[in-house]
Image (tube, rainbow, N blue to C red):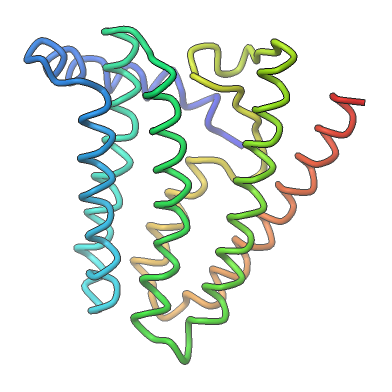
Length: 201
């Protein structure tokens, strides 16, 4: 919901480190894969109740997600990079609830499964819209430099990061917070269905 508004600030913050990395020959794909690998370590951290460590790893993953795009804009974006970025992002989002389910199956497993289903809804509606939009040559002014068509919604990247931070800071509230965020994700999914229905009719 607020990603487009935050984009100029994000780019300004990421530009200096991206230029430094690009000057040293670091490629965007390398940052994408490294960020994903570090983010994966949040799952065992969550499973062993190391919530502060998990939060740090999640934030590192998200910083890497911003850096890879900044490096790509410097060196030139590629279709492979855009594919890798979005594919790993959606998997990472779905794995965080798994970490909470492992931490406390009796308390968290049901809420985690509902949240993962909600993430499937937002991700599939996002990618379905993007694939048809690409076929029709559509673009969006809100995200002009993205590798694929970015369709907004109530729950976008910024809201998801804030949610992940909240559940790491207040892990005992995971079932309630996950239920609230899952409901918001379902709203996003339905609105994207409606937007696709209208845009492609």
